[in-house]
Image 1 (cartoon, rainbow, N blue to C red):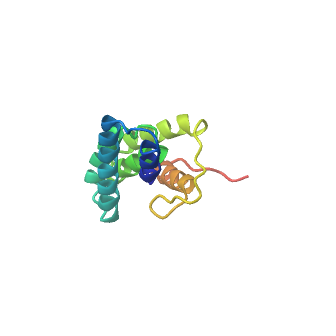
Image 2 (image 1 turned 90 degrees about the vertical axis):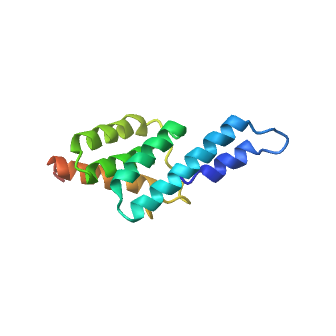
Image 3 (image 1 turned 120 degrees about the vertical axis):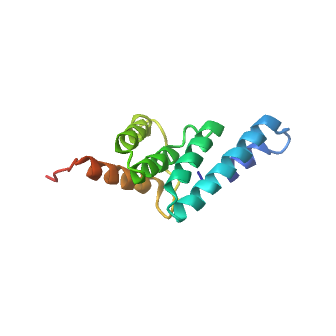
Length: 133
């Protein structure tokens, strides 16, 4: 999310011809991410979920924040178990992915903060409480 312009710059690298199929994928991902963001602003969680799935299917299948957004939408539509499963995907791949993009925000939060925000919401809903030592 919010990396579409970086991807576009890589596809239009000087001296290289952009692959039309990759451009179509990029445009589809961008369209679904924009819709996802707009639906999230108005708390239309069913459509957020649909757009997250569509963006993932279009090629954004390694964006941890997108899976967290999907988990947040699942939580909001009272599909707690599915939300927990979606966040477990994030936890599985979180260690191997670099999240350090300080200039990029996800719904007004630092990328790592958004992951923690969603994880905390799900943990509270699941009745998991962390004791601080």
